Length: 376
Ligand code: SAM
Image (cartoon, rainbow, N blue to C red; front, side, top):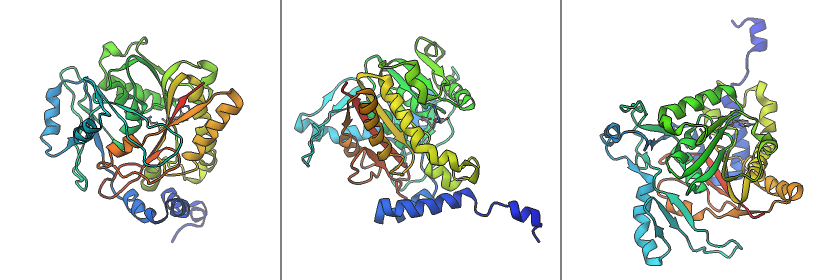
């Protein structure tokens, strides 16, 4: 029999159940008939990708090769689209980057957007429907780890950011550092500032960088690690960075459904959860202010929520114009979704940005991304 006092304080529903109820009521409307299959995928084991560390000695990669039919989804997609692109003469292949543009079928006002991708970023995945797991990373002779396991869809915002030729880059919410690592694989960054307001997560971020990046690169001139409140970045530095990644805290849908620990749907975090869209807007606005004129900003989340995705972007664009006189252009990412449609499932016809939706056969995401360019 349950003691009376204990029964009174006992949590009635664990946060993961509260999350599921919340998602059922909101996403069934937002995603319509797609929701049941996305729901099943979210409640099933996720799939990882192995981001290859090209700073590590290649001998350690034999472990991954030995695992059989995994493939670099970026290089593979390029090889597959290359013949079509050559026919359309829309590709400029450089030694380490490619540029792709797609013709648009509809008639909105955006220009076809050439998409530059760094082929230095390599991420292995197993084929659709194959749920083999990668072995853990191993150190090389210099103690640098061979690969970093992450949701392969998380690499897409890094590809979309299109870092090149000595760019100054800010990663405003960087811990634990998966996307920062992917950006560094391009070897195109002049200076990288990685920031996270959580001290403990910044410590983790530092450890990740030390495990993957050679000491010579971890100098203050090349990589700066800070722990500021990103919403206040405008007080520190404005009009500075060529590229800004704003990978905000969100309801982390997959985590919220699978783990009760540290769950944003727990009762004592209700206020924090409700404030998320406001904080996300402040972070994106700070990222916009930190970018230089002509600079590009990539907003990303790992939630399906329209309120944390498109509504935040719309509000930040509005505030940038009204409060700071900054005009922004939304960059079309359809070339990117076209290129990777065999690896990921994308939400159809999103009015603003692109989103990887989980699918049982390709259980990556959710990842939402929207790219903005500063006109003024
Ligand atoms: N980009 C990271 C990666 O790829 O590994 C993941 C970032 S995670 C989605 C969001 C991060 O935002 C968390 O580490 C959290 O500590 C940080 N964060 C939350 N509020 C913040 C703020 N006001 N300023 C800066 N960072 C913040």
